[in-house]
Image (tube, rainbow, N blue to C red; front, top):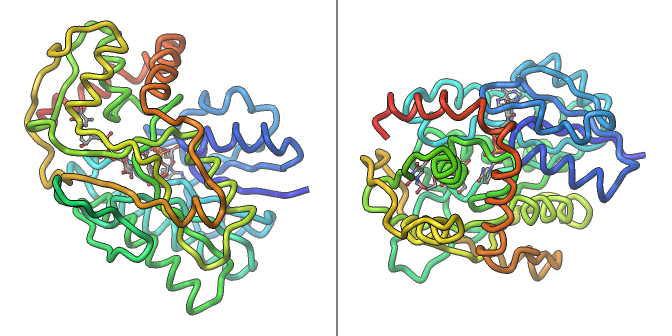
Length: 332
Ligand code: NAD
Ligand code: DAU
């Protein structure tokens, strides 16, 4: 029986990862460790609660990481502060959780000689020009812009140093923007979907020209499982669907899905330092591991996600007012 420790799985991507992993490998013995920050919600794991062990704790707690990692075979590390706007408001939890938390995990992985997969983001590469033909590749130099992306870049660098200096058995993946069930209402798509569902107008930063590449969370997690099963130790894999959109265009698509007029949104002040464009060249994971997204069009994923939010008001409603109050404070 494979024993797996999943960090941060009361959050969006980690919870979906545990649900998908148990559906594919019901024999896995999964322990989740999560600090239950504002972004952590045990309800995200409600459908699998009987099948996992849940430990409430901080990944920066070195004694706790030592104990939990001693008793597992594989560590899949999702836990992080994840929202750029919050990192601009107060960077300190990003430094603690993303850098010191990863350090604590690496020290325990090194000591107990366990397999680690580190989840990271395309934001570590900085941004691309809107009209450039370039995409991020595994060998693109790091150039992070925000406290969030700098903290994730730091964590990746620590993993690479522990690989080279101590020979730990680790892999890294950097994925593009995810969307899907259990996505926190602070993020772009859930914020706009739940604004529309509560009679508020969607909010577009700046001129809305920034580009993101949208990957369904199930496709991201399928890629992570492939890396765990077939990935080469020491390697980094970039994950992205190829579905790039300007923010104003994906918002127009969303308004159409939700039966709203195409101009039913407000422009709000831009995010400071706002990255222009992210785009992934995912040739390596497609060719080497045979990964291909199941959601072949963004429209298909958007339809499913809107339906999920419509059906699960009980899940997002309690977070909504507090999240909008934080945005009011930030002026966005
Ligand atoms: P999220 O904010 O929804 O969830 C993060 C989880 O980590 C929460 O449950 C939170 O309680 C937990 N956590 C935070 N600090 C912790 C700590 N010190 N100790 C223990 N638990 C802690 O984030 P997400 O969107 O699910 O992102 C998960 C990972 O994927 C992150 O590492 C993020 O950088 C990466 N990522 C996210 C995206 C995206 O589009 N959301 C894309 C690529 C990579
Ligand atoms: O690229 C991967 C990253 O994607 C992850 O590493 C991060 O954890 C995740 O939060 C996400 O970062 P972004 O900053 O790209 O996502 P966010 O949902 O915050 O915003 C997406 C785009 O939409 C971005 O250009 C900012 C814009 N935006 C966001 C919000 C919340 C708006 O125009 N209006 C909004 O209300």
